[in-house]
Length: 62
Image 1 (cartoon, rainbow, N blue to C red):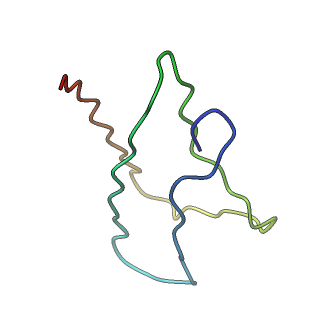
Image 2 (image 1 turned 45 degrees about the vertical axis):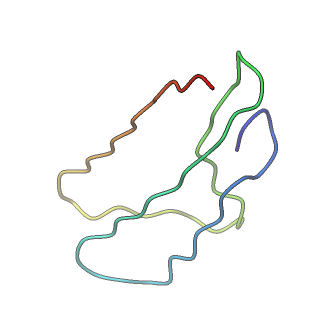
């Protein structure tokens, strides 16, 4: 979500093993608030293992 507007959706059924995904989010105005939100209403469960997350923020001028 960017400024409380959904910009990218993902589907994650019950799976085992590694889960990964990518999204390109274009922000028209700064500052912007970017959040990762579970909008399904279902619980999110993590295995008893290391959880890693990455984010890359790039600035481009035209």
